[in-house]
Image 1: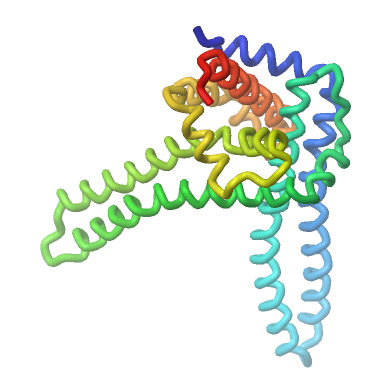
Image 2: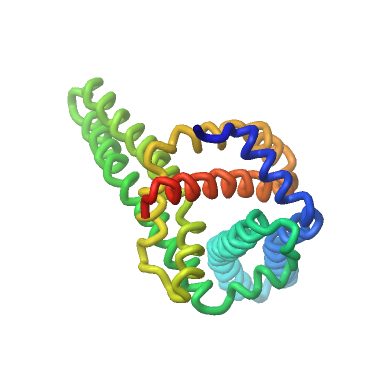
Length: 274
């Protein structure tokens, strides 16, 4: 008999309570860093553009700077999610140790993130993240591409086909659904990669996390989907607070998922499934 979502949430809150203040401070770190990067970029280049625009003799320089600013903006918008994503995984790993030893673990808001910059931690994070999102993308892109091409040819022909458009739409919906199913399948990849790294003292295989997660999640997609669904009010609150409430909601949700993960490990151990 599996634990209810309510029971998992109680375990998460109990694990979070002793270090709640430090955990919230740790969650603020990636937010502050991304805000600083954005602030520096916007202020420096906006001031530079204003100065150049006021001087009509340097129009070409202004245009070149404007293009450089656009390229840097694209670069910044690409880099910030990667930095925040890396820090988030480092935080998730720390929450795993917090859950397992809530009264013996002292969270260091900055130190617990920066110490993941060394091998094999960093490489394991990169490999697991790349393999996870690459496989999800591959599962989604094939039916989505087929659906898009089908709709395109159905609508562009001399005699548009409603059936073709409907079929293409079904392919696209299938791509969306299968990508979410795979997201659930691979949702425990970071936990399993971390445990394997600590168990062996080395770097796991490139696809170890997603393969192990897929195996552990057999028959559990519905439970995890329902667990996520019970946090819908928190997701809504994150939206209307521009993500501010996530400094509490994110560790709470992740600790609940860790409780879910720990239960599956216990069941597997009890059934001698390795």
